[in-house]
Length: 360
Image (cartoon, rainbow, N blue to C red; front, top):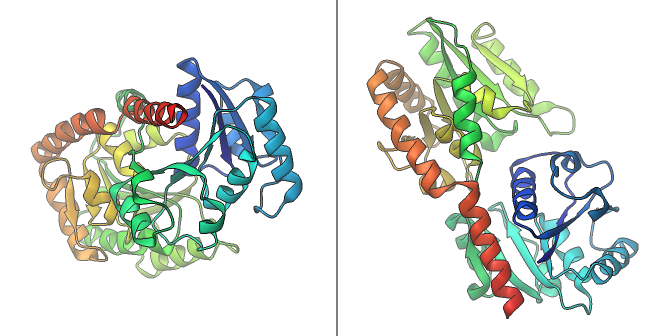
């Protein structure tokens, strides 16, 4: 098949990582894959399997950019594209316009829970399928009634499980030191302040643990990081809690963790939870929408109440004090990651969906 992936995001996040993994895997399976990106997008360097001549860069700030819509439509026709697949909501109308009068079919992926703009009803009537990355996202889409229920499909994000499991084997740990970490962009909804308050409780009870927060602050003036730095300072945790910013090699970072915590107040899926499971790191997660879909309580990880720093601290202390329980959760989680959330299953299901819509 001839497939065009569209993404206007300039930086790499979970959705962009998903697109890169999917596109590279489709090329390896013999498909002709194209990509439409914003000029200078970081994503371009991640599309290692795509022929550079198959990548087009054009302004994609909104669907009202008529020049970009016309150029993209021309590209779709000239390359005989069969599937146009958009991954960011602001790109959906542009993708719909790009199909024009061609025979290409429109596929969308929805990565988040918050409501879409009602104007999408006017531009997305030609959508053949909408992929939701979790059942929670699918339920949110159905509640909005923008798309017909029958075209919505759930395909969980997948990861290269082997890459994460290998990374832990190559990490050399300092004896006697324990590390508890979390990964996610710095924003209030990610619950990092609850993580820091939980860290304060644990640090008051034991002195062999350090805490790591990895993630980029995308706020205009860096106010999210400043807020967290102030909280760390107020709680006198400067020597025990570290904000390490954006980390390119997440697999290696996870290999240094003894526990992974997802303190999110809302989470459409939770890709970092899957990555931690695959890396052999026991998971503690708040019971957000995505975490409930991934973690089987007391089998593949622990679930605690959202916003409850004391419950997070208790779970951390319990697992740090019981190595055998950490090992049991790790074994179960690694198996679940491989069976349910592998890159292969994601690509298989997406490939089947493409075949379904082109046959129709």
